Length: 419
Ligand code: PLP
Image 1 (cartoon, rainbow, N blue to C red):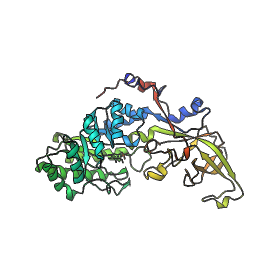
Image 2 (cartoon, rainbow, N blue to C red):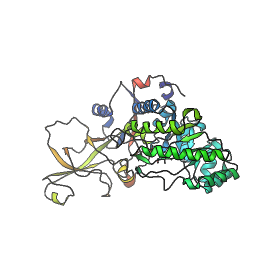
Image 3 (cartoon, rainbow, N blue to C red):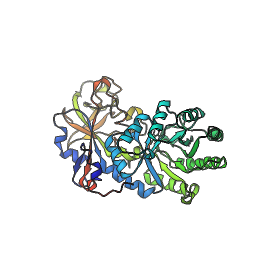
Image 4 (cartoon, rainbow, N blue to C red):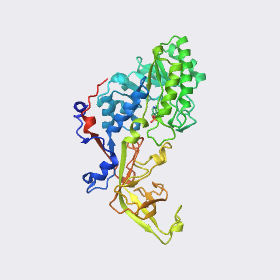
């Protein structure tokens, strides 16, 4: 592990089994003389998540969804651990290849692709790609005749925070016609994929989708295709506080696979987890750079019911790393806490936390009770690894958060086989 990572000199090695919040509490050197927000990316957490995945879903090879967080250290660690990568564009394919992934470890998992991106995949030998329409087949047939196609079907995502199946996925009623078109165009179809939606709250969605995929397999086999890959997409929870637990999801998936795609069927099963791997690994640290104490006109403040309300202005907000409050319905629980030990006897004030920009939509919390914070203090926010770094902007000219990857000596010294 260490020899493979040693080219990446931008991460820190730490003593065993550290907790990110403790690390931040004890390391003033990280935060001296700066107001710029930053993430601590706990690479040990990725490692633990991967072990958990292998123990619980040993038949399912994860292809990490790069879109979720494309920090190079994340890609590098996952590559060393042996995951594949779900890339959605030329840029993501370029990134994964530049960090050591091989073309056969990549699935180009976007059903609507610009022609130039398909051509790029072709020149780099990335053959596995999804589709869900006849128009896409025509482009693939013009640009990448060696493509190994995976038919994405639309499935029930009504219980997921982020629904994807209106935009992507062929209806089951259209599958046969699409497969016949593949035959006419002499294109290879190797499997079926689906995505139950990000932040899935009902594990039975996976069972129904796997059963639907079985029907599509049967139709394709009757038409003469050699079907050998099932891709069960993403949607897995990224932290233990989510509505459903990974253990419940894996139980439903394992049982459905045993029933519809048993191990002796010879079908390779892959998944495209994003949030699962990175959400809990990233803690965001934000600087409090301004403060107002409101005492006279508190009644004008929404939600205020005390004589004093504190307003804090922090160095990151909903246009930056905390964009999940606007864009990611699967992640609304943003709970900043103080970067110092808090005494239980300290007075709590009703407080509102605002992001740094000139926009009043840039509000990070509603009123909530917390000890007094001073200009220059730092606040921490856990579980910030999914769709944060990769979606944030520098709107209004505010710096984007830096990422500091950290790794324990224990993990550094581990002997990981590079499968
Ligand atoms: N695969 C595809 C095609 C996606 O669109 C997404 C997310 O939008 C993912 C995988 C990752 O999903 P999640 O982060 O919920 O695991």
